[in-house]
Length: 467
Image 1 (cartoon, rainbow, N blue to C red):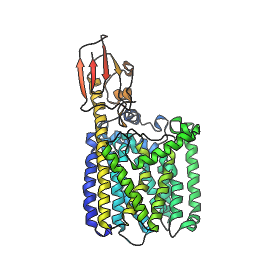
Image 2: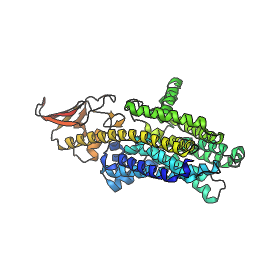
Image 3: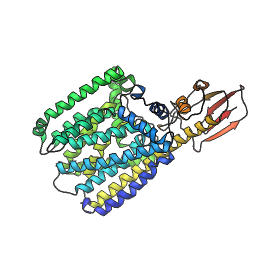
């Protein structure tokens, strides 16, 4: 078995984890898009920002503002630390699942593999590279803490208080955690020594948690005057079954493969990995197949909150929705690899991590580039002495990595430029599907149509400034 040869796993884990940290490098990133709006609100200690009900996430950004001010690297460093914490929790969750489901095997090595796959998983890029994407990470942290406390075989007063506390924290962090009750029910029913008997023994705790969820919904309704806004649930409200089914299919597919504009070789690599996982599922024994199926069921359920929103198929936009679902996906992948001979398992693990690392590197480049364009634009605005600034073709995103679709006016306030936001007018925006070209230049010219007005024109290759 692969897990009897632990040095192979540990060496591979260290190599790929170091590469991932290089890609996640927080010091090569900058603020993007909505970051400016929410950080500006955080500087004023405002909770429930922009009609959202995520106070714990808001508090985390407030803490960052207190610690780092307008130093973007500090916020991104915090995002990376949160991702590392979540990866460690995936280790403990996977190990707990292995202990509950299997009697033999190296449980620690299995858990290391699951957490490595999770840490490398390239569809986490939005949650790590985008400051506000941390909502998915924070939600997953509290969700895992809840599951670890709830899935204990015997409860104590402390463990009951713990899972209730973590459940409340999860609800107040991100809507992804709405699926925790059905996921916990599936896991409880699937436990070999528990099943329906274990579910019945826990039924009173499920009722308590359900009451807490209802109270949470009432608080959300009172605070926001609605349970869900149009942005979150437009297709739910219209009962657009076709769109919901299409979004669900996109969420499932994008969990296994990169966006369509990724390099063809990488997409082919994802296809190979997906085919190999199917082969492993076919080859493994009944017990492991059941465990993988249970993880897949939890994965499918955890995608439900995002059916109305869907996910970007041309870039990384919306990948934060895959953060919590990928916990179950990676645990299921790890148990399949644990069932085959070590040489084959080692080769498949290296192939998977290699494909993941390539896509992670591409995603990192897009977010770094998007941040550099934002920083370049802010520096130009800060140095501009014109009374009025007119902007044309403002870029929105680079393959899903947000640039300046929103938050330009708030950026001038947050960064203390001393400009009247009404003097900065955006006339047009670029299509998200038209990427900018690296290296992106700033070209100044003295040609100006109006005295006292600067015209900023964004093209594929450069920002042209007419004064």
